[in-house]
Length: 414
Image (cartoon, rainbow, N blue to C red; front, side, top):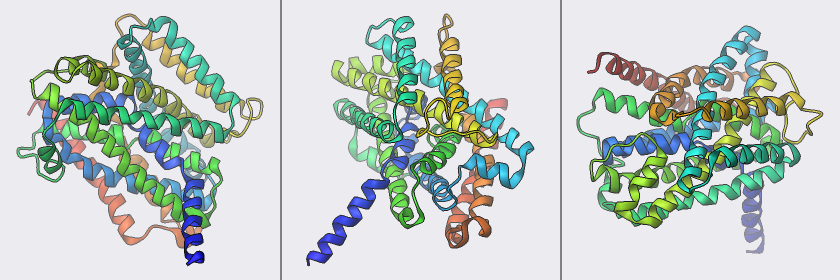
């Protein structure tokens, strides 16, 4: 009996050791751009948009697991592996795609931070630069473990969306049934919006981040099953959070046919229907989501930059040893700040298009995940199973088809 209890607690201890990469990546997918996209989608389609959550959760779990497994087994980042296996020309192309898409997300997050500060009556021209400067100093001066604990602490604030949804009083029975019900008439606009929701949940930056972050954590293959479990649990918890975000909007704005273009608008518009506290909690969630995104997304691109071009890049290294890694992180947030501080700038007005771009770019990354995770020389007995291949390839094909239909609908206004 004692030995059974000891083994049980030993497994829990090992799970807690690996805890971090899956949770941080999955919840950071619900960044300011994510909250904006979920809010806009929910205000347009109501309970019908909830049908997308289970397929998106499956795609998120499968793709993140592959990225984590590649890092644990090979000890190298995704950028390293693409450069080594496919050459520098392909690496430059993939990095260019990742940089463009990721920078769009950075603009969303900095813009989201600006909007959240405005919600709390704070002068963004003063506080936005201060917050981003302090973020850079924290990233440079802290160790990997301290940064990870801080990110995990921030995830707790996503509970604000749970409380906000409860205060909004949605139809809980319909909310649960809508997860598995077909949405009825599937329009081109619905497909376009669904790809945008997918693109803000399953992200290009997320694929690079979890891979490099796991590599930085230095997990070994004997702990792979615990990391896989963490990724699966994180994917489910993250999309439960998405469900609550959408419900808060559906029960208030969709129910009253109010149109919005972003998350800050949603926080303001929720107040008359669900009360000041619900709007305040939604706004606080946006603030934390934006801050987490401002940290994670530039880090993902900095990781990719270092790996694609063969530079040292690790959160465990000081500024001197990983100078280019930290400078590239800084350049991104400075550029984002410069753009967002321009008068009348509001990226949330095109937030669905930014996330749709991420969604249609995913098959490119899925192709490399598929090739690398099936490479026997790299992965040995840890290469993809038949079902993993079916789900990963099927996801890429389904996204491509839906994206083409969505683009056609937007162009020809079907």
